[in-house]
Length: 368
Image 1 (tube, helix red, strand yellow):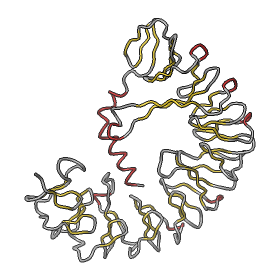
Image 2 (spheres, one colour; image 1 turned 90 degrees about the vertical axis):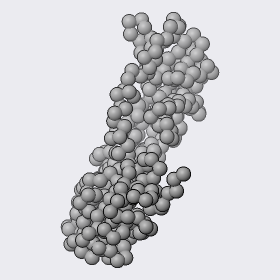
Image 3 (cartoon, helix red, strand yellow; image 1 turned 120 degrees about the vertical axis):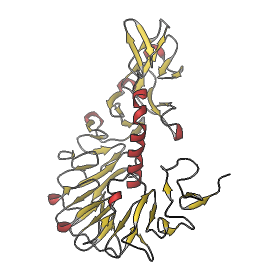
Image 4 (cartoon, rainbow, N blue to C red; image 1 turned 180 degrees about the horizontal axis):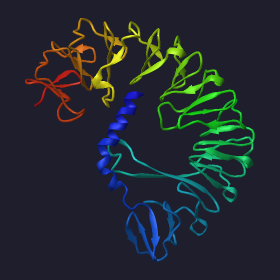
């Protein structure tokens, strides 16, 4: 999980210089009798801008670059930036990017909302909509107990007078009257605490945390605790002592008895002397080394014979003790510590080199 977070942060920082390009004029605009889309003028006099995302002319409805001529243009209307409808159908539209062209190629999808009742179909914002029979999330219907009272709580949480829902799923046993959002990852009611992750995230869905609610407090994400135990995301850290629990960083924590990697005990680690290597404390590298008074660790693995005093982390999974170069815990064969150099990950023909060879993920690369 932390590897994904760090990769995302590094990517954003690297691409910051491109952001002004992507913040240029976007969507449909109508000003001073001039109609534009993404800054390009549209001269069709029958063209009508409905909002930033939707428009229509005398024959066709549009969602950004995409047209859908099967819509009934005369009755077509935009409900928000994603939902639209005509007298016969409701539509959910979205824009996405994919793969290595994420920041360069936009794609649009237009979905006819199945079983929608257009006459009563309304947007609720945040990708939600409803009609007289059911609720909808991203254009997909889901059953609710009382659609008339279905309202947004915040973000992707909604409720009716009987039940709380997250995206399309009921939050089982949630108390409607006391349910509240704590932040962008946690929620609670009078008797339960929940961790939630959105549909596009690895830890998606909503999960009850097995905690004592009365004493529950949030720590630095993704940690929390009550007066007895500590928790990583929504998992109890078995054996943890809440009173002495502290966060080391980069997915490691400890108490007076143990060191933990995420929610598991790091076997053999000495809690009193355990630390992240100084170079690593704020590193955006994918892998991290740690140590105590007698061991060096990569994740939950230890080394064989190693010079702990001379050991230093180099970045991107590489380290050295002056005698050897290591990738994770394996010796990089024939690598020369005195001339070994790390590239930014994915740069050039490999991610490291010494005076004689190039290496990718600890393996010598043959460069033609």
